[in-house]
Image (cartoon, rainbow, N blue to C red):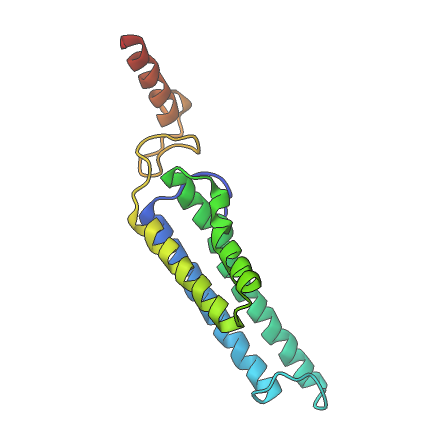
Length: 173
């Protein structure tokens, strides 16, 4: 479920998953930055001191940094869209913070740190809203409620029961 691009995610699962992936990403990013600092002596210049040890260390630092960004991307590509679907929105709304970053920098001509700060503030607000806002009760167009127990016996599955209950309630009205 943590790698699936479909379905819904409840608040608790979202918070725990995001914190786990964020923590792993921060660890890899910090370790990769430390290794890159060892190679560059604090300045990231790829000249003069090129030997095999520095090259291998540089590559390993870059690989760790890339791995960190993959963990961060998993949050925005998988978990945030699943949580948005649980609330009832399309998963494509997860790209909204990215547009703020791009438009904020290009339209205002803001410096890198100003655009980064605004984007991170918007990301934090969206994250807090997704953690606090309850999901849609019952089945919505994106799938069954993640809080309900799943019975894999098709005859007794939630989706079959839900559709039968809807049919009977529509007949009664």
